[in-house]
Amino acid sequence: MGYVTAVPHPRSEAPGSARAGRLSLAVALLSGALGAAVALLATRQQWSQGTATVAGGAFPLTAKGSDVTGVPAALAIVGLAALVAVFAVRRAGRLAVAALLALSGAGIITTALLGASDSSALDEQAAQASGDTSAAVDTLSHTAWPYVAVAGGVLILLAGLLALRYGRLWPAMSGRYERGGTPQPRRKAPAVDPDRPEDLWKALDRGEDPTGA
Image (tube, rainbow, N blue to C red; front, side, top):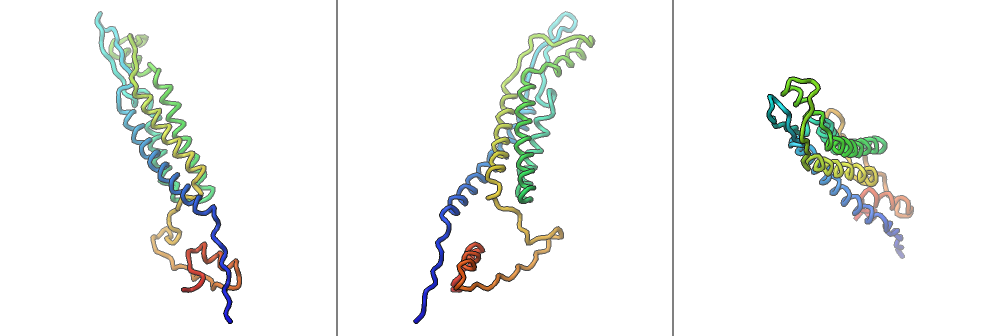
């Protein structure tokens, strides 16, 4: 009389981990890409304005975000590159790249907040317009664009934190390809002994049918 080998039930936490990995991946990709685009856009807009006294009259002055500081734009590019690089590395390398992604967002937030009240770019323009190196801008005011850059930094920071927390659950570039781009043959899966539960578990983890059907 034949016998039936009991197959252990899959671990209940696996589906939950897979869902968390997929959701965090989607949110990180969206927030990271959107954050970089927002930060880059904000640095190209007008951050501050004022006037300089030239020949007894008021001369209008304006400064873009890139005139005030080039750091947010540079960090947005770094963050975008780190977001892509997360999928090219594993284990400790993935943690390092995720940390770089988070730090890029934090750096954008810090420098954009500092730039929101900076007047050095307009002071330099006032000195050039008046011919007086000690001249300073008058009636200085700022726009909301520095805070838009801050929002972009927050999104990039969120992507980095998600990568640090859930990155181990995310897929990586296939290891079947070497640097030359040549696909490597798959290793033959070991034979499954139906009398050994540990072999059944390994087959299930590989996505195989342990019954051989």
